[in-house]
Image 1 (tube, rainbow, N blue to C red):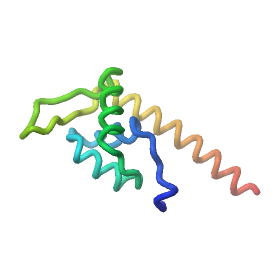
Image 2 (cartoon, helix red, strand yellow):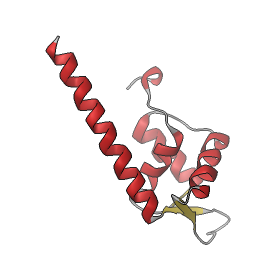
Image 3 (cartoon, one colour):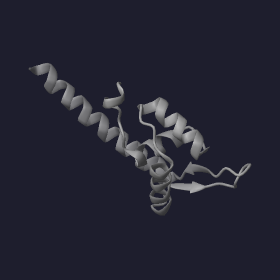
Length: 101
C-alpha cells in the first residue's frame, strides 16, 4: 500500500495489534504501522484505547517500567473475530464484482 492508500480504523487496528499478546502503546504504534501503513499519533491511539477499555474489549495490565501494557479480553477477541470475518465477506464480494466486469 502507498501512504495514501493505508487502512485506518484505530480501534480495529489496536484490537488486531493485541491479538497475539499484550503490548504497550509504543509497541502498538510500531506494529500498527507495519500492519496497515497507518502511523497513529499518541492522541489517536490512546483515544482508541480508552474507548476499547470502556467497552470491555481490552484491559490494562500491571505497569512495566513506566509502560502500560494492554491485552484483549474474551469479549475483545470475539469482537475482533466477528469484525474481521465481516470485513472478509465484504472484501470477497467486492473482488467478485470487480472480476465480473
